[in-house]
Length: 383
Image (cartoon, rainbow, N blue to C red):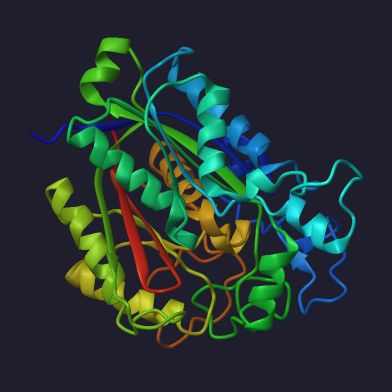
């Protein structure tokens, strides 16, 4: 028997700050966080702009902060039995210093922080820091990593293999990915992200970290925990179309979302937080995929890309955008697609341009995709 999955706590950090209110004042107000990067010298790179929140703490500290907030909101105690699932590529700060010759002097051996480059180390350390017991897993599937962590946690809970799961993800803007995305001409040329617009020129990176506490409805009732929403559907799929480009019809995204809707027991959707990367191939493919998924409802359902304000958060995208979608559901406000100009003729949905809209949202879908054809869909329902 499949058990109901509830979301009972969250913590979040973006370039706007820590917690829900900075998101409301930034993302939901349609105010992009993009500015010149001061964290490192951007001189060698094509792009000098990202959505950063000042200095970068070690990834382990950022994960601990947001997970601690989520655990506190959910009312979990030290020693609780909980799975810890993290979407991360690891922290390469120590290795960057080593190769640059700026590693602090010390004993011969691996660079300081070398262990932090191992994704599994982040999950292990987070569980130890939180003082919880249970399975510890790391997911490294790029831009769907933390969404995959959430989907796997839902599967563990629904199947009875876990009662509680703490899911987290974090990415802080650093040189390696700025160089990679820049060399692939994927980064915006004008310092803005304009998803679904005719004049879009690419994505921009952003700082992001979030954690959510998921648990079975039975377990939450026993603890007296307050449910913030139900995670009634989840799905994942791969279209394996191209190493970097999505399937032109959004086939994998449609399959992932259809699986989430089947689990949730019905096709009704009131809002979609799209993957929306403002890139040449993603936006029309996602639009076509959503038209296939939504059918006759495609012109009714609002769709927006919150990356237009936060930037692309890579491994953290799934869980941060899940929190944003949760706020939309609870506040009854649709976050806009910021910086919206003229729509691409191939992008013909309601993208909530520039201004937030009030709306009675009962079911909201959040989508993510990654290189190699990986796709995820998570469906939140109001309780």
